[in-house]
Image 1 (cartoon, rainbow, N blue to C red):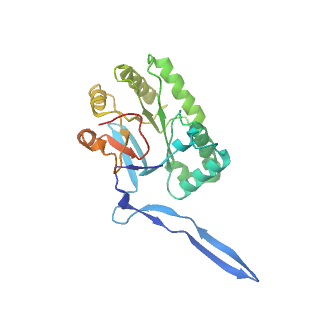
Image 2: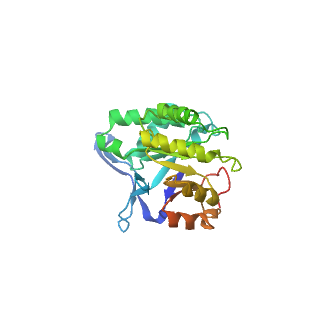
Image 3: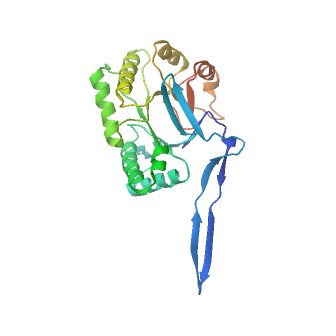
Length: 258
């Protein structure tokens, strides 16, 4: 899955692989290899997007690698091959990864991946890598200790002191506990355990309520494609007015978000 952050896909191009070789006797040996790379076209010089709300800000690659395929519905995941693939994406300039605590081993894979980045890549690559995760709790009472416990689990699995982005989802809008959860998440952000708080698949009405309660969310990840343009009905207008960014995905969503 690839996700686009407020940018048309036509803005991107893909540099083809380049391979050079020379013949040694009867054998042709590869002398250099340049992998496929994703770059923003010259006319659009912004390959990095910035999501922000007030003092909260996060810069990230506009194309996000989705990790929902690791959740188990597509067969067993080979850990080493998965992490190798993540490294290849990062080397190609696709340095943002989107996951969730419910996506099987996704957060654990990211933890292995980020440690290999730390050991095997230059510091500037580590500075560009972003890990976006989600928290999809049951609609139980959202106490500060409960929220903290779950966020600490994700931090441990991903092996990071602070989550780049925590995207929150709620199943039952009749239960307003989502506001309590978001307030506790904002407290954890102030403590430095989360860099930015965001949403996933919230509808327009609830997004407006959240913002009116003074909770600084930076983005809302929603399904959007040629066959599903629900965000254009109401969501896009509210986001333009408030500065909340949309992270759009072509995968099936949790709920309606018009």
